[in-house]
Length: 383
Image (cartoon, rainbow, N blue to C red):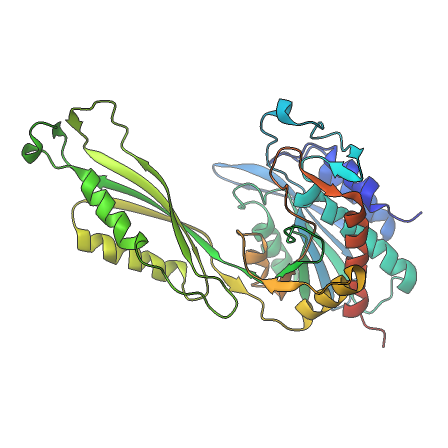
């Protein structure tokens, strides 16, 4: 019996796999893949100070080239469950839409992966001139330490190679087939603490107020654009996300002030260069400060070429519209995969991802499976 991508999506949603809990989601996926001939390997990784994470690598075939579908079964918390009109883990269908946490991000795409492989091998057999793999993590919505990055290390150690990869992130803003992501901006977060000397607000000359210095430091990095964009990326952005003094008194100058800012940067920059640029500007302001930098990912780009064209052709054949190529949005695990092979992202409509009443059109799940099938047809061209 052919794999029903909608039924498989429902089965995955009914496993409340809120990061880092698996809740049986990977088992549901294994049960669907094993009858198709996949060799499934469960991979559990640990690191000090982080939760253990279950991952899955499944491969059909042993020959090259290896085409990989990548994604994650973990989902974000539901928030206030009473605000959902449809229970978040019951996977109800109403009005042609499937509701539940993870429908868009990204259990629907994972189910479409499986249905696509099933349809492809039903038509071509298992001797199609290569291999198909699924790399599925339970750590994409979490710290991303014990997930994809460690699966990729495990693959390298075993000599497992990928020649191309599609990540099933919900790339489309309003309708299926709008957008293929060929890269993502990098993300740098700065944690700034400026030190002064506490004192009475009536005698400011006897104190050293850190707040004006903090404001000047933030202005030094925020007031002018970082760049004007590049050929494939929009302009880099800096957002100040919090300023905190923690001072309950109105007549006390505080001893320190804190701020956090986030930079989403394009391929004009690297995290290292931006860190130097930030410190140079803070040093010009002067005074004692502490700066901690966290870089969750560098910018990356898969230049338009064979892989993006294959996905674009498959999407256009199924939807009648040719997708645009862009690099907008946040980060994804494609930032790790890009070091191993060409990678693009294409999935469902993401308008409700991470929101209350997350949902997708039922018809879109079936269409996405046809698109992924079309990708496989075009990648594994008959001799």
